[in-house]
Image (cartoon, rainbow, N blue to C red; front, side, top):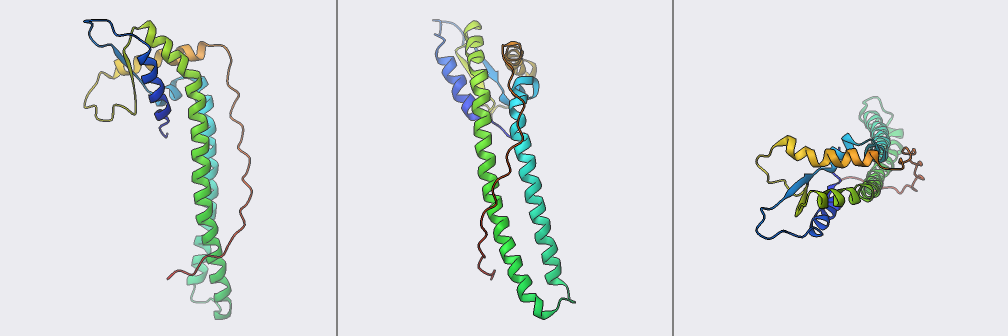
Length: 198
């Protein structure tokens, strides 16, 4: 599961800044994990499923294209290949190689686009709950799972408790996100022959 926390990290810190620090009081903070939220909240999980479906579909297409390349490579390496057909097959392989590279780039862009969309949708739903809960608990700061990479040790139950409450409130809130629709198949890009490999 990929991390979607950067936008939530900003949200958590901005939520914390709205809570005034009491004079002479020990710092109060909590930990919020969008990855835990996605696993424990039905609503967040339903939104996240669009990214999982997109990733799976893109991976299957890339694997199919890779298999085509592998098959052509085996044909080119075959000692029984007719020399007259070898040049045409080599050109076909170069064209297919170019298509595969372009598909890889397009797939990465598409995945990032959906990842951003999903992250923003989850943040929009969870943001007000994180802020409200931070105010209720009189917190000065809420750390995200991206902001504690240098952490050596922490009480795991304590770390999960804030996000667990956010997930509970999110699922109890009005409105249910629509299930992820199957992404439309991208239009095939026009292929251009690649320069021969040296």
